[in-house]
Amino acid sequence: MKNIMLILSLLFALISCEKPKEKEQKEEMIMYVPSEMTVLMREMFEFQEKSKKQIENGQLPLGFPEKFKEIHSAELSDQFERDASFKGFTNLYFQDIERLNSSTKETAKKNFNLAINTCIACHNTTCHGPVTRIKKLLIK
Ligand code: HEC
Image (cartoon, rainbow, N blue to C red):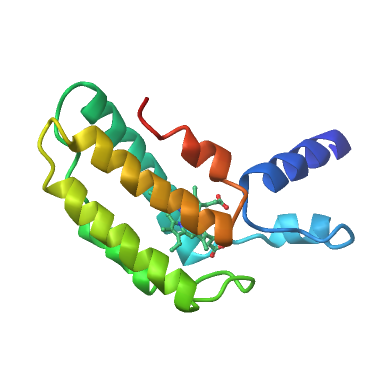
């Protein structure tokens, strides 16, 4: 059981934005409830994985679901703040998505990668944990 907790908390530290403090680590793990934004971002990650496959198969990207617009308002966990830079990246991301949605099969790959680079840029200023995973979304 102790080992499992250790592995879990290591994994947690690797993939998540949260930075559990050592002493409270165990307690936080048990009480951890992902924020609205975290839940939304995880769904968006899966969505972009599917969209990537679609483009790799020579098709147009999947239509971007309206619900992801909630990124503008979804509740963040305490350590993050919707400051000017955050809002800037959010707006940039939605511009990228608009461009992606009006892509042709020829421009889809380039526009997809532009959008993913905005995910990475925002994450580099806020939540470093998932950056390596997000980079894997880039189409070669
Ligand atoms: C405007 C900045 C911003 C943009 C753009 C952005 N993210 Fe995020 N992302 C965040 C923040 C901040 C969190 C942490 C939310 C929280 O803890 O409340 C997060 C959380 C996540 C998580 C959850 C990590 C966990 O703890 O499980 C994933 C996965 C993720 N983002 C992937 C993406 C992907 C993929 C994109 C682009 C398609 C993207 N993000 C675009 C700021 C952003």
